[in-house]
Image 1 (cartoon, rainbow, N blue to C red):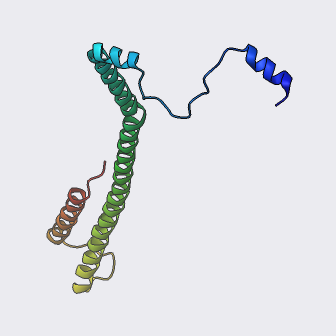
Image 2: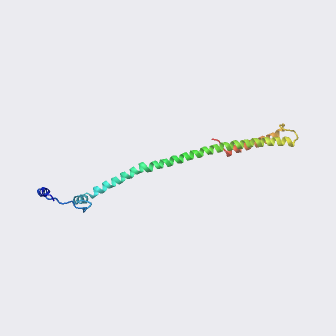
Image 3: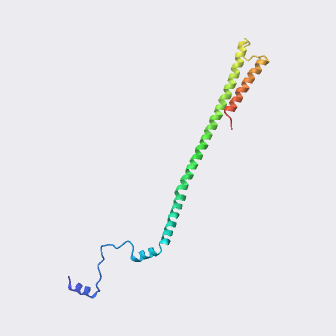
Length: 147
């Protein structure tokens, strides 16, 4: 070593080299404080855990529940809409079938009496056919109620 460096180092006080070994996790002072204040530390830890739990619930769980409720509501609305369309179409088809049956029955009665098409049937027969048409119409409205 250079003599100047030796003289410079001699003038300085001796310092211990830093140890490569790590000390305990807590210093003795921290251990003493924790022993004396264990209840406060436990209470603080419990408050932090509760705060984190509430934060997680409000930022993650609640929005997920709301999304599920919204999706279920939209699905129910979509199903009601489809059902309403189906019900309306089915009602219209049923009423059309009732009218076609009425017309076919009227034509059949006219042909059975050799009176041609669009004939005038006797009142009793016409009333009977009208009652059947009304019953079929009422059944359609009962089976497929419109909203």
